[in-house]
Length: 301
Ligand SMILES: [Mn+2]
Image 1 (cartoon, rainbow, N blue to C red):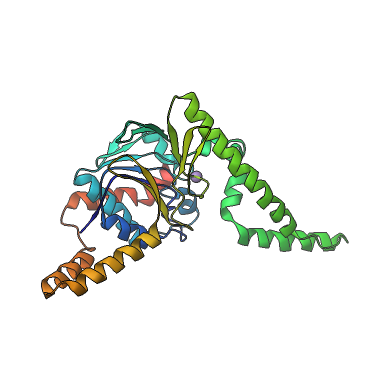
Image 2: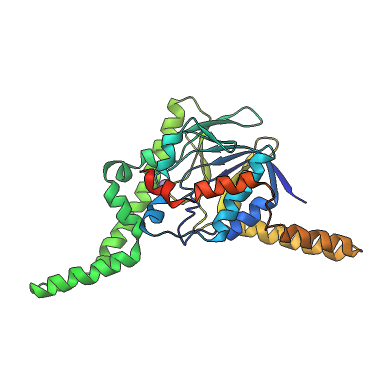
């Protein structure tokens, strides 16, 4: 039994990086039916893939699920982000029923027009210094390494130890201002375009709130928080915690299995879970081979 929504908004899966919680995402996609899916950028982390090829089966499963849903009639729109900006050169094209677009407009069931954009173009750090944000993505471990080198060098020239953690703390504070600036910038853009709201991702902070009468809807991510936005049949947008959703789904299923008298139901649900292996249709395999091809990722600079 699948849950039904009108639309799904997913961003920042970072497939191809080991942080991606692909199993959970694949599971949730399996149990949902919807008319529209918007992939709101950073779905595939090409920055990481270029550094190191990492592509476990679960990452394929996510793509396969999406292709399968597309095959069955879900309209999928892929709005690339900065980590998969290579896909931006294909804007306007359709791959396996998946439409690629720079930005998209979604009209909710109750007629609200929402701008759908990843959000990185409002991120001045990314825009002005790609190098800096690449460094940011590489992360804390590297920072610690740099800290050791840095302090080794300081020691050599006779300077005292200086912890970079102070610099990090300062950055955490400025991160809060950054987030609020990001929200303001997106809301202003939506307002300029006459939209009722904006759906975005990028900063890995899920949020649904109203700012100056404009809806600010951030999908969050599938690296840390495992969140997504869903549109109900009536047009209401809800933020979903994917792990909670799955837990509730499993509990409901266990209850159904228990109350169900026959083993047929159990067999059906066992089959439902086993059906992961799939795929009869060679088309899917071709599509996945293309997407997961290192040559493709490497060439698309
Ligand atoms: Mn991003």
